[in-house]
Image 1 (cartoon, one colour):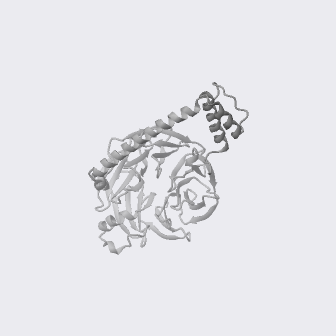
Image 2: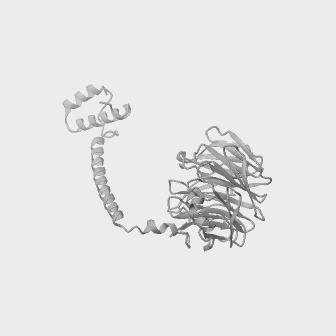
Image 3: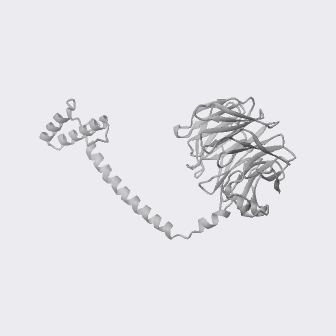
Length: 415
């Protein structure tokens, strides 16, 4: 029979049994076991750690068994309640949007917040700040978890990989850092290669590559395992503000101070399309997720069959300092719709998990929610006392996070 105990664990068990046999007066059994286990140095002593250990373990096991039975009973009851509960949550969550007041107001950063990102599995929220740090929070309780230090200038952007094993950050100190989430957020790699401030960073969906955008006008592709820069994408003529990947990782979209957004083919590194029409710096560019396609197609009057529903990267959404948001056809570069309503720069964009709404963060201190089916703003959230610099949607809970120049991170419940 193969033992599941280590040699040390076996020795401790044998000593605990010897102590029990001796204390209970089983002298013959005690002598036989001591001889068979060859533990000649064991001397019964009421003060040593083995004294009464077997009985303590036994009572602990009984206690745990009782607890397990209680928990199994509770779980069964809760499962029955869930099975019998009305399906209201599932049917209405498509329209759930963030509502005031905020659930949590997270304070601790000493300079403006530049980026917020939800962990894809755990109930954790990361925030980056111009104070050179990244902070980790429990977004359910609002508790502060830890601070990641290592950058020497403003942290510009952060992102988790799809599995939540790593967090990547980029900074005005020209570096990109990779942090191991499951090893106390230890910094396992620092990537250098950009010649100016690194503005934006993302993992590819596969998790083996990182893409970064910089004030040096380039986008770089990095291998996570080796830390080497594999590719440099050149095309923008000014500071590249943001980079995002398509759901399949085949395409990148970037936004720049040159007032254009660009679509890049990851395989060739070439620009496939540039989007021109904004009258000022483009702060942010994202791909519309596949779930948003039916709503977009209704907005622009396309039949659903006109586009392949399953192919990522067909629509691009941009937010600009010209106060507008624009929706583009990625294949043709055609402007499909302009969302007008913000009174200041548009700084961040995120699409609702259902695909029905677009949320935008702005320097007018608000978050606006746009119905992608009608193109209209359905709700405005007065979010912060200063510019709203970033926004993120949690994919596992109905929660939105925003960050601001007011140095706070706010967590908003959606309902």
